[in-house]
Image (cartoon, rainbow, N blue to C red; front, side, top):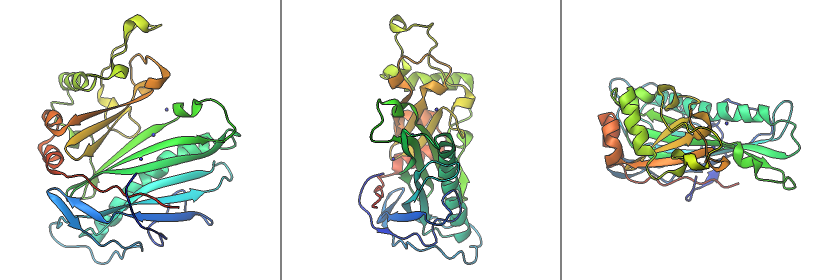
Length: 307
């Protein structure tokens, strides 16, 4: 132009919220804690505190990789000024062996949600048919090495508004972080150099569009010349790009904004579509470390939120 489940425990995020667009009086915060965090080869029990962490001294030498706990924070903000009412979710972690890196990672996770939601709050402020704007958060992978989060953004209409126009105003953002150094993985960290060449992107597009009607529009039913699905370097896993990528246990998931691509969109229902490749299918396109984590990971319990 936009996700979380499972059981958890809600509490007050006394120190977990930091700054951001909800750092204002009257903002209500709830935290949901994932009871377990999964390492690359299995589960590891983790005790998680809902209080803000103590930065303490930075660890010296190589970072010790341990399972971290991920939690979803929900914040509600009333309408005011130039912003629409909003409900925000974002992810934070605890239990990292390096407190300074943990702080850096949490800042990156919060910033991605803040940035997307701030745009929606500004664009939909003052509209009588909008009840609130919202963001959702889903931890899609949590291993000792990588944390992957999918953020979604959208609009909640007022109860008396008509039509399904709201479906046309959603967007997605993905954050993948290397827990060993706190870096966000860019497209060149996830995919091989060969994949990012024209021939490699063409092969990837060919795999993604198999069985996906939105990526295979039928020219016979189009009112304009057919422009087929293809991937340009700028389309893939960059901030604001049309294709966002998340890591999953034994899979690689793509959220594709067809409207944002240089291709023909067959219908409004195809504004956003999804595609998922099994780890073995995705591996030829991926850097070895990423492929290894996907193949070894086991499903992560999804934190859920409670009011």
